[in-house]
Length: 101
Image (cartoon, rainbow, N blue to C red; front, top):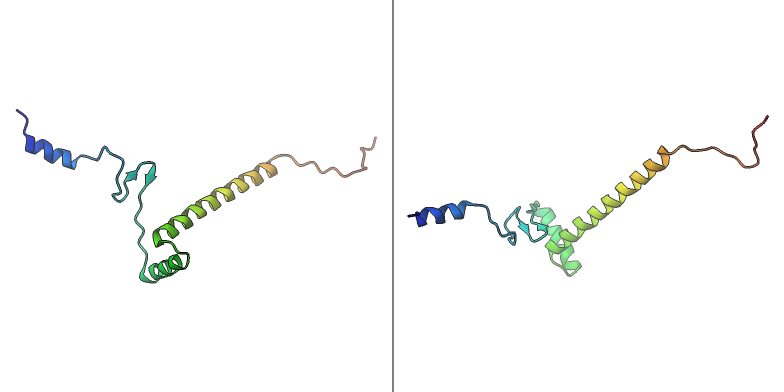
């Protein structure tokens, strides 16, 4: 006969199978939850700016992070494109110059 109390205790210690959670560092659907600690001055600045933009500090921070990630991805794409351009042989052809025989 299984020990119900022991099984309940072990089930409570087991990782959650449900990904719909907001626990720190846990998944929520297709999202990841992070904690962000700011010093008091930065926290006050964030609150003031959020009030100016009529949004929450959390929404403003999230927007900034997503903007920065897009910016970094675009910068990386530009760098890769530039690297590909310079990696290809460049022909220094000038108009109206023909090879001499």
